[in-house]
View 1 (cartoon, rainbow, N blue to C red):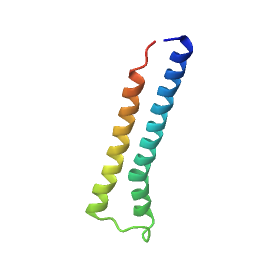
View 2: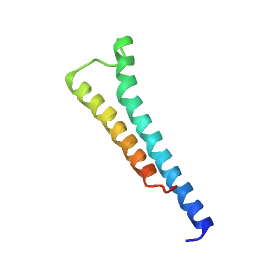
View 3: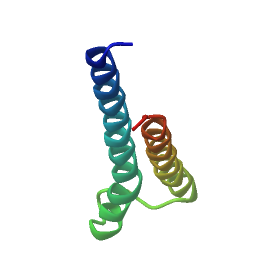
View 4: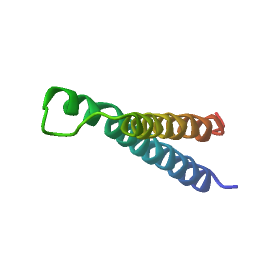
Amino acid sequence: MTEITKVIRTERTKLTASSLNTIGLAFAITGGVVPMIGLVIPDFATPSPIRLVISLWWVALGFVLHIAARAILGRLEE
C-alpha cells in the first residue's frame, strides 16, 4: 500500500468515526434534552412512562454510536 493510499484510508476512517460520533451526539441530545424542555414548559409535552422509555432509547443509541466511533478509530495504525 502506498503512503498516499494509507493517508486517504486514514482520513476516510476518521471522517466515518466523526460522522458516527456526531449522529450519536444528536441522538443523545434528542433523547436527553428535549424531554427536559418538556418538564420546564408545561404545554410542550406531557411526561409519561412511554416517553421516558423512548428518551432512554435515544440516549442509549447515541452512546452506542459513540462507542462504535471509538472502535473505528481504534483500528487506525500508527
